[in-house]
Structures are given as C-alpha cells and as structure tokens.
Image 1 (cartoon, rainbow, N blue to C red):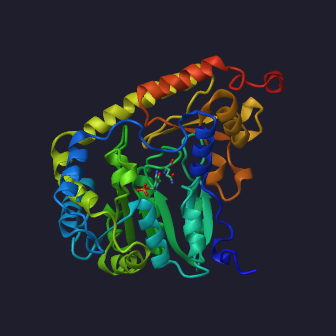
Image 2 (cartoon, rainbow, N blue to C red):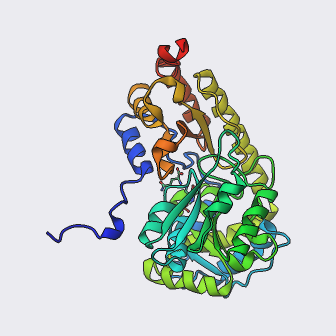
Image 3 (cartoon, rainbow, N blue to C red):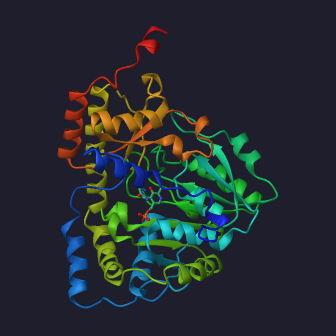
Length: 400
Ligand code: PMP
Ligand code: GLN
C-alpha cells in the first residue's frame, strides 16, 4: 500500500496546540493553552496592513522579503543588538511565513543526515520534528526547575564530533527563562570551540520583564555562526499574520534562502509592507515599553488567579506563559491534569511534558498563557471557583 507518509515524518504527530485548542472548542473551555493574544492588535499595525491591501500591494514580494522591510529589520537590529555587527539587508536577512517557517528552513539548510543538534529541554514543539525531517539527531540538555539553569558540564558533554548545531530559545517557551549574559557566553564559548552553529529562536525578544533580552549573535564572534529568528506575531499581537525573519551572515542566509525559495517562495506582501511601516514607529513611540507593562500586568493577574485556585506559579523572566506544578494533585501527571482541566473545569492549558524527548523524564507542569483579555482571565477564575475539586491536592498526597 503506497498511500502512506514518508519515513521522514513517521514520528511527527498532531501538535499539542492543535489538540488542546480542538478540545477547548469542543468543551467550550476558556483557552489558556495555545499561545496567542485574544485582545485586539494595535490600531496603527492594523491600519498599515489595511492601507497596503487597499493600495494593491497584493502580489508576490521578492523571495528574500521586500527590500524596504529588510532595510527596516536591519535598522531595528541596531536597537535589538546594540554592540553587535550591523547586518546587510541585501544579503543577511530572509523574510518568511512566521518563525515556524524560518526555523524549518534554517534547520533543513544546515543539518545533514546523522548530524547532532543540541536543544535545551523543555523545547518548543517544532524543533524535534524539524531536526527529524532533516535527518538529524536531537541531543537534549535539561533546563532544571525551578529557575531553569543548566548544568555546564552536562552541556559540555553533549558536544561531540557529530554536533552541527545548537538550538537556543530566549526568552524561552514554555519556561519563561531569559538566558543571562554569562550563560550565553558559556554556550557561545562551547559552540566556538566545537565549531557549532546556533539557531536562536528569539520570537519573544520584546516580552521581557526584568533583564534585557540579549541576542547571542551580538556576542563577540557569534554573528558569523548564528541564525537569529524573529517574528512579528508576538511583538505586535498578530500571530495570524505569520511574518517572521532570519538574520544570519551571507553564507548562512544563502542556505536559508535556498530552502525558503521552495518551501513558500515568499509570504504575504501587504503584511510585509505593514511591518516595514510599523518597525520604525514602534522603535520611537514607546510601543515596546507599553507591551512589557501590559504583559507584566496580565502576568500578575493570571498568577493571582492561579494562586487562588491552588496552583502557585513559578517565577518567569519573559514570554507570556506561567507554569504550575501539578504533580501533587493526583491527576496522572500534567497530561492527565490538562485533560481533566479542560473537560471538568472548562479551562485549557498545555502539558509541558510534551516538550521533552522523553516525557517520563519531565517535571509535571501545566502551562497557562496570559496573552488574554482580563475578561478571559476572569472567566477562567470563575471556572476554577465553580469546580475547585481538581486543583485541591489529592488526599493520598496530603496524608503522605
Ligand atoms: N518559536 C517559539 C518559541 C514560539 O513560541 C512560537 C509560537 N508561539 C514560534 C516559534 C512560532 O512563531 P510564528 O507564529 O511566527 O511562526
Ligand atoms: N507557539 C504557540 C505556543 O507556544 C503556538 C503556535 C502553534 O500553534 N503552533 O503556544
């Protein structure tokens, strides 16, 4: 029977976000699972796209991205990575269909079958399948709760003769960790010593609460070996627009462009035009400060709601998720908890063990997204108040 998928995709199942969002719809649950804002995007962002659609900027953009957008991204890079080398918009930037596409392009462009790729675990769900589709082998290195540091000796031991790349994600989904300068320097030193490339997923660069986000490509001599990936989705609350970019030195960008050319060739021209308009405005009108203040407030509101429901959360440095330990609730781990939460309480969350190559090794944590209207967060609070049974510790555990 030939009607089956290739071996390459044998291990690729349905994404947890699709699964939980479908369950949330089915049970009319308050969806704090999949990470997307349910509040309106800023007016100036929406107006920019509407204007370009009306002005008939509706045909293919060049494959590497609109030149004026690449110039705007190169200018913005000086704000994001002060002290790092300037990037050439002609050769060093590729625009594509969200960070998801650029991650896929970057990995397919650099990983040969049998190459090893180091990832920190928990790791965003796309990395494993992307590496598998390239024929690579994942080498996970754990981030350790509650503060998600990594053990340097364990990281160093993960590097070997077949190591080709390390995938970094800062600010980190799902833990909210923002890698510190000394941690990035340690990673950079190992990558330089072993001549390893870095794919750095920095889609939450603007959602940081305490320390500044530091792109690893801005550290000395790191630009030449790093593909930095960004996205408009989180920063401008337009996850459905799917405009992402990869910044890398010319030879790596050429490889990324080779894949991008035949994955999507190009993505939505009017949304690219809109981003080109929006970047210089946001850089000077306080948009990023407002975004951070706004998310700080939403974070605190959800933390209070979860706390009141008996689900205290771990501290975070960035991104828009809170984690809570559900191991003591007697629900059969995080997967059992999230399944019961959506069906019995009517709130959807993401079990984080799915972000581990070996889910059995994962701490039992549920991830709640706070990129939501106050009304949505309050609706979750009401659901928790109506069905308090699930979030109370199990008796067997209380007695133990
Ligand atoms: N990387 C991380 C860490 C993410 O959390 C997400 C989406 N939430 C993506 C990549 C995908 O970004 P995009 O929607 O731009 O494809
Ligand atoms: N990245 C989003 C999250 O972490 C989901 C994106 C998706 O649905 N693929 O929740």
